[in-house]
Length: 75
Image 1 (cartoon, rainbow, N blue to C red):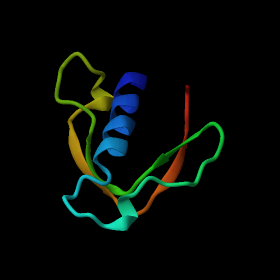
Image 2 (cartoon, rainbow, N blue to C red):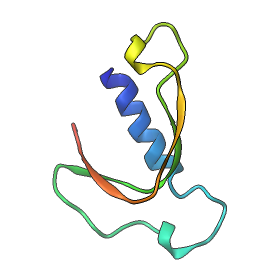
Image 3 (spheres, rainbow, N blue to C red):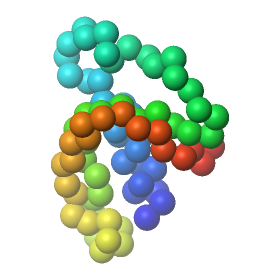
């Protein structure tokens, strides 16, 4: 489950500003909180359809986040 969650967070962070515009709201944020990862709003696929993952991690679903938020980082 942790692996799917980490992949989902990575996908959200990579796709959050991938809307094809040059909108300044997608520029790198200068906000930083130690031990936290800034996740930008956007659309991403969470979960997986692969049977190797737990039932609680399936099916894959598209989600849209309307706001940015900080998520605890495990790094």
